[in-house]
Length: 415
Ligand SMILES: [Zn+2]
Image 1 (spheres, helix red, strand yellow):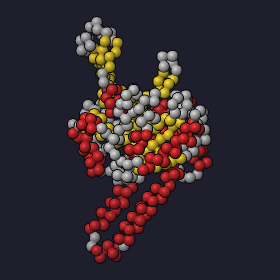
Image 2 (cartoon, helix red, strand yellow; image 1 turned 60 degrees about the vertical axis):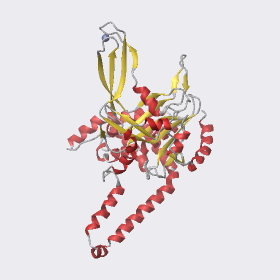
Image 3 (cartoon, helix red, strand yellow; image 1 turned 180 degrees about the vertical axis):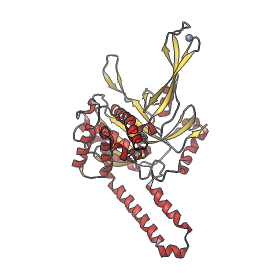
Image 4 (cartoon, helix red, strand yellow; image 1 turned 90 degrees about the vertical axis):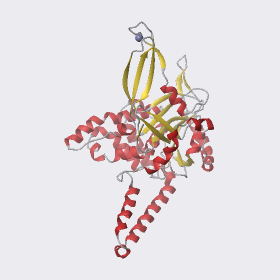
């Protein structure tokens, strides 16, 4: 494996990224193509109400607001100012501590599990998704088959720990809860295959967990269904008589072709949605139909897989190293509405060959979020974690980005 060589070469490059300035990399042509609502995306995100249950910071702010009805005398008597100051101080201390401890966020790599570490780091960047799993612990903890959720949340709980041996034991336990036998050895695997497998395994537990929840007068909501799954409609139309058929399909991610020429993610998505011709023997005698996919629903997290591995005519696996223009924001239309998405994480495959290489992950710092002007991101290279910025990630991962995670901004907008 070329993994060791790549791992030692990468960190040097990472450190340069900290000072990268934030600039809008969009060309004038790209800016001109953006629809009129595009500029609303970021503004809309700032006014969206976040559930109190989901955001502890909002809870503490709420406590402050409730005291506003008291007189100054009452506030002094009740020690409100002290309470508020103490809470603010505690919040600031926690924040500072977390900022200092970011170097502990890494996961050790005892074998060739950089693909597992990268997938885990990307999933842990999806705060709402993780909270959706966490808040249903009282349900999945009762089901032996839901070991994947338990091992995933164990890893989440020890994310800030500097206890490397403990993390290795948790990673091994996580690995053993994956049903697919493909991932049971400690040999490098495809990160996209693992991610798809993990999400499908969590989804498959849903009926069992729903039944168990119903028996206790409760309800279970699948985090994967709620955050990643989206519905597409596959439309086939005969080129002769224009008759056709439609079929609905569910996805957890889309696999986009990487073609030469440095196309943007938006263009690649458009290519995917463009009608393709296929052979089909229609009753009218025509043999060609057009096939087109379009979004029926939009997910909260849009996962895009860039197909950098393909087979040659002689069935040799090869790596496609062509550049991809990674966009910070992406506008996606479904048949019913329009979604504005922000890039929150990337999984990257470093290495020119398909047979070897090294996976690393970039993710937005959840403490500041993707809308924060500091644009603070982290690069997770197994146990090593370095600071970077979202703009730097877009710039540096042109040739290596493999899976992109876009989080939907704000609420749904109806056309
Ligand atoms: Zn026909």
